[in-house]
Image (cartoon, rainbow, N blue to C red; front, side, top):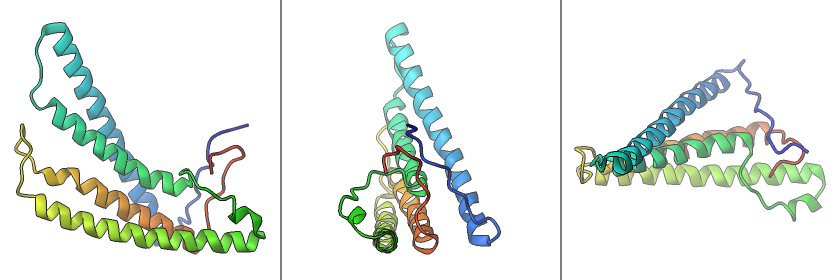
Length: 175
């Protein structure tokens, strides 16, 4: 049995479908950059520390920042695919029509929660923007920005599920 999720097919005939696809491509690119930075900085830090008894002062903060960005940028891509773990033991007891309604209702409630999280993240980032990291002249607000981006894009994917229904899931997947 396969354990992967089928790719989501966007409605690219409409501008919202094209916009969501464009946003996902941008987030995927930023996610790849964040992971590359994290792996590169941590690898360099380990090589320098154990090979030459040197260290990079800012390596911990940059690698931690890249880790936070990679996690919160990956979340909406999982939401898009329907890849997050769901407990559906009760939902599966209902007829398929009721299951679809319940999944869409859950997606709507989740989308509203993601909007609230994105809004709160903007507020927290603004409050912390003047505070700087200890080894860099960067705002600690940069740790909160990906939370807002991830929540906002997750809300858009959840709204797509409300309108179009949940994505198809491959046999044997975690969903």
